[in-house]
Image (cartoon, rainbow, N blue to C red; front, side):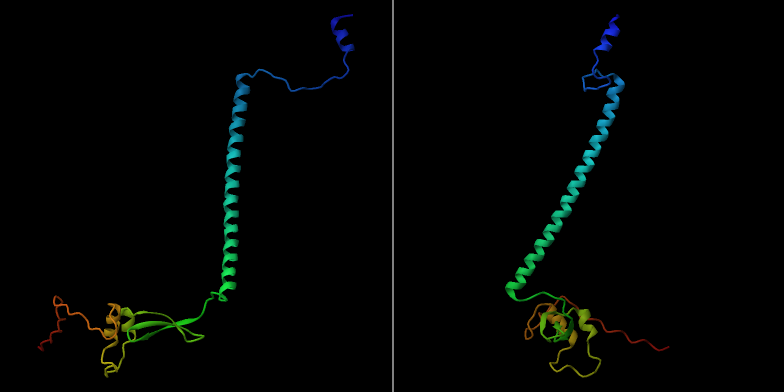
Amino acid sequence: MTAQTAQTEDIVKDNITRELACELNDRDVLTIARAKAKAEAELEELQEEIDDERTAQKARLEAVEKRIEIMGAEIRTGEQRRPVPCYERFVKGMIEVVRKDTSEVIDRRAASLVEAQKVMPMTEEPPADDASTLDQAAHKQRGFAEDDEDPVDEDVAEPKKPRARKKR
């Protein structure tokens, strides 16, 4: 009997594999390096997706917390903020914001000169308080109370009157 014949007679199981250390050649190292780089890129992408998902979940969480906070305040105060139809009106040089449902004035500010010009009376008779609508608005816009007098500015020249055209 030869040595090879003797070895085959002792085999109990054939074609089994085990993980064993093997020396790598340059081609093996290059293949593994490319696979590693690809896996690292995949890992980075997954981490970014997780971060994006965390950010989205955190935003959703904060939105729910805010809704709960608002509802708690509504319960405590017995009031809720809702859109309410309103309108603006001009009154003595002021613009008032008025609720349509209750006619309550909810805001008041000085009218701009443009706003005051839009509501100037088209009649020749002077207003009851003897001041034009435009003057009232300008007075309010400068921050004066209704009975304060305008400061006199001596540096401001009087507006020039248009010249009459000569007939030919």
